[in-house]
Each structure stands twice: as C-alpha cells, then as structure tokens.
Image (cartoon, rainbow, N blue to C red; front, side, top):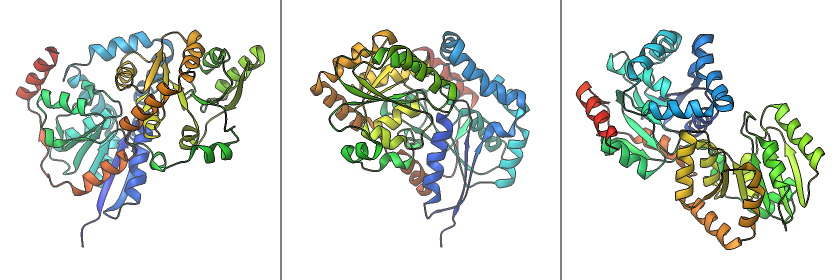
Length: 398
C-alpha cells in the first residue's frame, strides 16, 4: 500500500489570484487517492500585522493610487537575485510562526502559489530542516525574478515561452512543467450556453457581455458601464462588482444618471457561480489579471481588456493580444465603440473564441497534483552563488 502524501499548500493574500490558485489545487488534492492530509494556509496569517499590511494593503493601495510606481518597481526588481538578500531577511524576521508550522507538519509535498512562502521553504530545505518537495506555481503568464528560488523541486508555469525563458537562465527543463495557471475544477466542466442563459435569466438572442470588477471591487466598473451604454446594437451586460458594496452602488448610480441605451444591464455583487456566468457570455470585459484571464481562457471566452496594471498585467496583456484572444482598449471612454465593432464582426469574435480555447488549460490544477504525486525526483535543484551570478548576467542580455 502506497504512503498517502501529506500536502501543504501556501499562498499569500496579496490580491486574490494566489489564493484562488491554492484553492483550486486543494480541491483536486482532496479528491485524489494518493493524498492524505491537506493543509492550505495563507502565509500572511502567520505574520505580524505590520508585515501583513506591507504585503496585502500596500499592494492594493499601489494598484489603486500609484500604479505607475508599482510598474516601475516591477521592472526595476525583475533581475535575478537583485532583491534576494533583502527579501530573505524580511521574510525570516517576520514569519517565525510560519516556520514553526512547516517544521512541525513536515509535509511530503509543499506547493507555493506565491513567492514569499516559497522563499521560506527554500531556506528550510537548504538548511536541512525539512525534507519536503518544494513546487512553485507561477500565477501570471510571464515570469518575474521574485519567483526565483534557491532550492526547488519543480516549477509549474503557464506557457511554453515561460519555460523557455527559465531554461535560458539555466534551470533544468525536466524540472519545469507547463501546466497553465490552476483554476477551480468547475471551469473544466463542459457547459451549454443556451442552458446557462435560461438558468441565469438571460435572453438567448442577444449577445452577453460579462464585466468583471475583480473580487475586491477596485476596478472602475462604473466607467466601463458608462462607455458600454454607447453600444450601437442591443446587448446584455452583466456587471459583477465584487465584494465591496460601494462598487455596486457606484454602478447603480451611473445607470440612474445616464440610462441604459440599447443595453440591458444586470448588476451583481460578488458571485460564486463565475464559471456559469463566463459560460453564458460571449465576451469578458476585464483587467488582465493572471487568474481571471486563465479562467476566461479555460471557458474559451474572449476578452476586451483595459487599463492593465503596469508590470505583470501589462505582460499578461501582451500574451493575450499575441495569442489573438483579446482586444485592448487604451481609453475606457471608447470601450463601447471597440466592443460594438467586435460584436459587429462575428467571424472575428469566433476566431478569438477558438484562440481562447487553444490557450485555455482547464485541467491545470489536475496537472499540478498528478505531476506531484508521480514525481520521482527526490533531490532538490539548488542554485549556488556562481549560478545565481550567471543567471543575472544572462537576464541583463535580454
């Protein structure tokens, strides 16, 4: 009888994508026969308040109020090991309860969907304090240097291009799996658009545009609604405003001021049935976060993207545009015009849908878990100082 694996999943609540990826992996683990105990924790819950606010609230503040600064830091820090010593010192000083948890649990498999806990696990491995296999799941399409780890067993990345980049840095190709970004298994369930529209109270004969303000409701959904009122054709627009009631209130106020035009609007708060709403839609209007984009691709849903956060969302945007699954609107005020043009070209929208299906990896979480359960490599890859310097030199030549 095979030993049931003890699995520790670690994320961090800086945004929601890392947590959703961790939840997707947990769901698959709990229904896999080779897994025994599963522990899924937000690493920030084991830190002090100052450190927790630094990682979560500061990030959201920069997204909302200083995205240019966030983009500048993203680009400046995207050099292998440039911020490594500072990160490790900061993490070790503020995460001692997390270190105690890991040392006590002694998991067989550790999966990190955020680079902060991966740094800690890597340190414990190099210090011979735990023997767990460390796997790192990258939750954007591109790869930033903050995800690099001194010791690891496997990386899971979204694209073949990302794997190619890591191999140019010197990481072994056989320790990098192109899995896609793990999404909830519900996004892998086949759906029938007509059935979903009946269930959700949507008309069958009008296009459905799904607008996502993000789970935290910080995106300017009311500006998107204002622009979509200008659509030249009849359509249905479903606006998912997220967890903040004030985001929904701003959208309702905008509709009260300007009316709906030819568009029927349905305004919702936070929803648990996002796979159903995506399955019923013809187009998703959203910022190009890694997780939201991966969910849309898993459903074969094209995107109209706007206002990407400088840094990772801009790079996600590049990938979506290159693959032909999205259009981009640089000015929200003409979003209605661009979406109207797309809806008026069914052939182009159909090509985008096919491209989304090709890019989508609805089984990504399953790929991650099954790869880990069948993994035969026991020794970690350790990146020594000379190799780190070579990686940095290689990255500077890009």
